[in-house]
Picture (cartoon, rainbow, N blue to C red):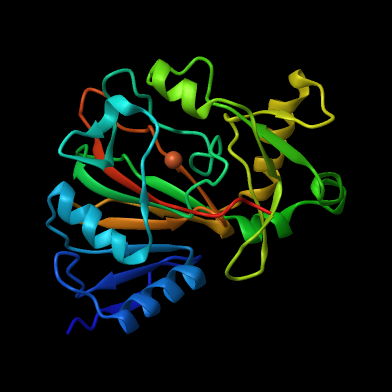
Length: 269
Ligand SMILES: [Fe+2]
């Protein structure tokens, strides 16, 4: 029986999990405890994993149902639920704050990343607590966004999307800007800054500056967590209440490769 230890990661939020092996069975009580820890901490870092793509996928399936990711070219052929996140093949580091796959009607509840190749220095992933982000907004901003609806598409200038991806997942999906978390019942700021190309009732050219302004208000050191990767780390983030970004501040001559699984989620409300 696995009895992992869960302990706080740093000063803001997030927790690390030690003495858990994702290749081995995990009892239902332990899965519940880990799911609760994710709800409480928003980010979990499971240390010291040594996994094939299939083991990664199957271990993570304890926490939800893996869903296929867009970018067909980056799926791992022998295990298509696992996708590569890499600074090669025209893929650019996702350096802007976002939550994943908002161009889907039911975006993933969680994103799980597993480090496979890391640069000698840097290449961190940063996370931000969007419950706190909503609280950090001015009363005026909060009032303005409370019933706001974003329209989400794939970035038109992103060369990593195939025609097949666009046919399936580029149809302008509406989501509320303020999302109620389906498990905690708490409200969080919810958008993807480069996929929310439109906001209902707002002129298109005003959308991006408006979203950038919201990020500036909502993301501060006190609600941010910087994860410096160690090989073996598996990181789970709750996409319903946290945003993330890749820090591109490393030597791009070095390859950085993460594997990614996403878990099915609900339609945001
Ligand atoms: Fe992402």
